[in-house]
Length: 115
Image (cartoon, rainbow, N blue to C red; front, top):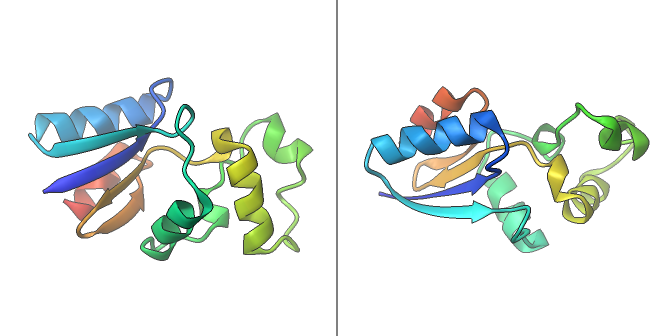
């Protein structure tokens, strides 16, 4: 099974999820999205495969979320995508994609839903 993890090595949950995948012997593609940001097309394709919304993909803790006013419910998906693309640190992590779907793996055990 081919699996892609959108990974932030500074995030404990992301490291735990990566370890779970490696321990399971799964063939992995690791994308450190802060070093190699995803494109709009890639991000839209991931969201389309998730049971989550664009808003769910945005981290709400931290000053950047507040400073950008992303808690404004009037913002549409395009505006939220723009914010994610301009500020990849806002993306929830990790995001894991397999043939069975895409999940925001918080908590890390969520990855089991798509393995």
